[in-house]
Image (cartoon, rainbow, N blue to C red; front, side, top):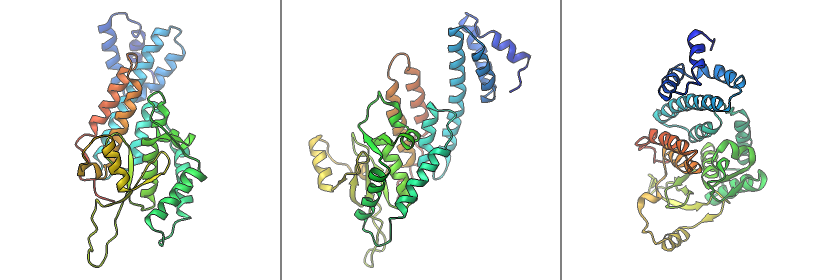
Length: 298
């Protein structure tokens, strides 16, 4: 944005010690939208005072966040929002200028290498063995336990770059690749876990309409480990929770991204960063009550 007299005047007031004046100035600067960010960045580079730099940084953050709120709203309003698009929006909270070309290039290599080894004669378990071989052995993706000290483990763009992610980010990537290959793998809502399930979409002469929520087996996205129904029943016994049908339904893409936002927000649960936790939860609120009809296999 070209500087003008009003912008110059506003910038000169950024060091005003009066909180009310600064608030008024900030809101006016924010009203210009993200087009004013280059001006703020130039001002930051030419400002020696650390406290004023911090004010400028917060203004830039607010502008990026305002823009991100709009992107989340647009994504949530789509009839069938793509899972990876939503996950990349989460990454934009930390990397507002995120360029997706490297991530998409890596994603395409992953998809193509799996596709080359698939054929129509493979059983569901054989399909997943192929996915696991390429994902974990050939491309060497590593799953790690969830730690709120490791922010980048939640961000799918960093998983594609570093080949390392926790169960949520790995699981989102795993499900997205399976969807690209028409493999019916979806995340389900089992308590205290982020786990994937392979859904039976087959039909036969006597039952031409497949049961949409019949699960053949489960997949741990940390390692690709396959679990049976009996394994899952043992898990529920161990945590003393009564299984509910809702735990075994596919999560909508909106719900998955909201869960990612909720978990990622816990990385900022300290006094200095509490506003980030609240902002991330606010982005999750945008996705509430949306996508309620997205539980079918697609």
